Length: 315
Ligand SMILES: [Zn+2]
Image (tube, rainbow, N blue to C red; front, side, top):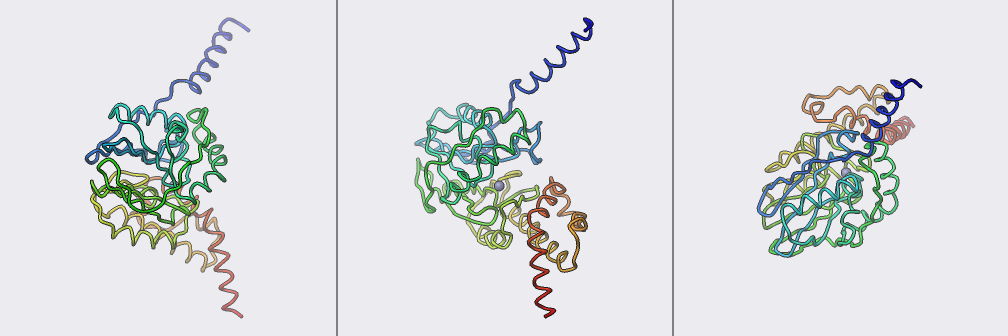
């Protein structure tokens, strides 16, 4: 090896090692959206090596007794940086972390809150116990070194839906279904802020890996009647009123009817992947990737049902 080759060899490995293990910073900045209430907004993107999985909204409420945290983000590192960000806003203790549902971007920061009660709906706890490791593995593939040292921490406390008075805030813990098998929303009746979790997406294509579209659409009807001022979606910017609920509903209705019609017309999956959709649908962030994922999860069953029905009609 010539000296020049030696220098390039060392420089190459120095670059690889520092970019893989160098200090990663999610740059979390709590945004105050109401009295005592903060959110940390994720990017409207798919998971990648640049965003480190920070595509999700987390939040916290600083009550008189202490802090209520809502979701812990996609990695141990995110959880630690979320905790540090909370510490820059308040010196009050953390009382409890809620996990809204089982998906990895909402729960893999739990490790940083391990000494506090971590609460979730019973079905969510079962889901994390059964599928958490699988999610963790796939997040390593999608976000790389940001995931270093992340392990699954299963919630320790089962949420009973209903009212919770805590440090001057009256919280309603609401159980929904549709985005996943159990979706927890938190409505702070004191401030009028609704943490809607992934039941609502804003400006971003909804994800459907565990979705039941019919249940989700029914739940959105209930949700739009709730009394709130400001809605924090699971993904996308914070918004007043019901606009983001309508947007989520429009997308899910379009998805359901497009896939059903495609199946009735006998379209192949390859054909379905080139959809004819209005700009209000295709203009949502991450449309291409999420739509493709949805077709892969949902179309085989819809196609099989259409074939069965077709056969019954012919008999
Ligand atoms: Zn989700």
